[in-house]
Image 1 (cartoon, rainbow, N blue to C red):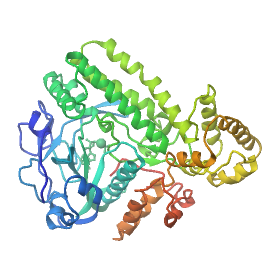
Image 2: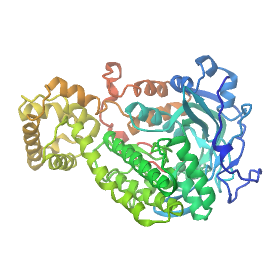
Image 3: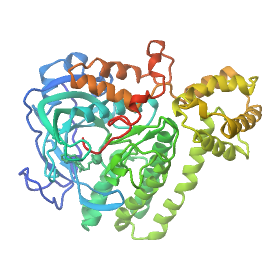
Image 4: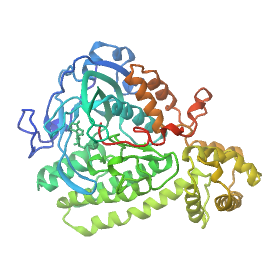
Length: 521
Ligand code: AMP
Ligand code: MG
């Protein structure tokens, strides 16, 4: 296996001087060297042809014994020095101290076609950051990460990627709903890729410990490798850095809102410094359009990470990052200014995005109101987000309300609720919408083409992932591949997959894994 290995993180930043793999606070370092745990009986379930090629390997490589061994942690590549990163984080609003890669191990970095990829195994055993946990991952959550990160990429959402999904051959004990019913599940390992896996929390832990020199080293490292466009110096350099991270974070969240993705656990340790969607845990996809929805049962009470709150949390998390960078700037005002601009930038991008979802590409002073009314109307009765927006592109500017209604009614979960007041709200909205459409310069056909590139037909509905998991637990991995192939072209009509363009089936409404996810993974 011929990889162009070019490590930087573990060469340019300070390493933990202790080599022993024991659970502890790791001071004065950005990472600890640690080797993945050997597994009993590794077996490759799926590998991404695209990502195999992205790191400079061939499909033939991917069928080799070496590939299996390396990407399940059973063999260390020559000239590589695997490590776990040290980071902290605010979890559910509270400072949680040191967290770190408790079950992720970075193997190495490779450069291929001018693109840097850090390669990380998730679920490959304990590290100094594992605290009381086992460093392992179960098959169900590994399938969810593997499929979703690739689906997100093909939707055009910034994200970490996935290279391979394997069984470890070892069983893992988990109490899925944290209700005193632990059971053994199959252990699995995902190998995942990103230019870097650095999080807000990597900076926070150093600031919390007042390790300002290392903090500066980490910021300089990040800027040098991942924000080379920043050429300013001194304090301005770190301010420009925060501006860039803010903008990337906004872009990412606007994309989440566009496709109906709810991350579920937007703690600062799960915020990528590159603005990538990272750590696919108790995430979910909106079925009924609902600002208040969160898939994460751990968050059921306060719904901090609900769909309608993701942008606010993005800002909250940036505040924590700004605090962490403060020692490099030592002035509150310019930091504050950068954060103060967040809401205006976000709102502008969000409006643009929502307008494009309904096929509006020119400006009108009433657009904000039109969008607001749509958001309200969508929530009057449970309405499938994906189906509604996808089918909206089928309407013609000549349509009567009845014709239009025929075209979108498949998105309502309870069609008998769409009468009286609710129906009048829809009539009123479509009335305004049709008037507004007259101002656009596109034919029905052209508008549909444009809208269909923004409103996906296929997303990884919660129950779809669960069906793949149920099969996989019985040793049948076909559905993983089917969904993987389907989600490569989320905006295309794929008649052979039409059955996946459907509302959530009723059995999935309250099923664990479909609408209720916990952090247990
Ligand atoms: P998460 O909620 O998955 O983002 O995880 C939060 C923290 O817990 C991170 O530091 C993880 O590395 C750690 N963690 C989660 N699950 C495990 C596990 N099974 N073993 C060790 N550490 C874990
Ligand atoms: Mg995490």
